[in-house]
Image (tube, rainbow, N blue to C red):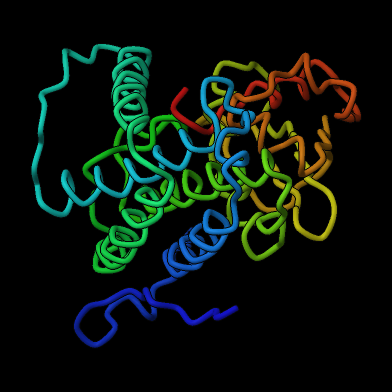
Length: 293
């Protein structure tokens, strides 16, 4: 399988080459697209109708949603075309409700579109999607904030990181449903879960604790890692390895992606999660949702 990258940050004289991005996944987007197309082309008619972990969607519905993501980005962000005006958004739940409505409308319309046409349209829109994000100044303000990370304003690099998690998650939902591995690797899974962990400080924002309290969240095996959340005067923040650890939460990789995307809930997986130390403090991490849901 070719791993040649078709996307790289563009700009005069590689103006971003010497600037380290907090999260840099733009080059992985075309690789995910390539794997997706190969996956979809391998599916049988029965595979397209298999139920996914996303309870309202079958495999074909998830593929249609991925196409919606490509077209929406190219239309709204690249082409500056807003086809409809959203209703007043006064809260996080208002925004989630609006997005859920858009998603449901699209998936319903795509019921009449064949799997072959979905694959064709995903192939046509995939490269322009990647090229658009590769062309952006990663440090410029994004049109949309990453609300699940508690951000009221985001830079493009964080918005692109969020897009990576969307692409990874929905492809993994399909792979899980048809039992085809491919994304549970350090190359693809670690960036995904590392981005999701940006939601930890927002998850703990109302949790009272002594200054310096440390929560460690570990996703074991070679594809995962450990993340440290520490209480500071300004609130909870991700930090480098810190001790002493008040609570450590250990979540298997196969559980983590479903839990933090809200497809699974803490009560469904509590028996597969280990919490060492302060159990009450550690259990807060199981409430993290790093998607708009």
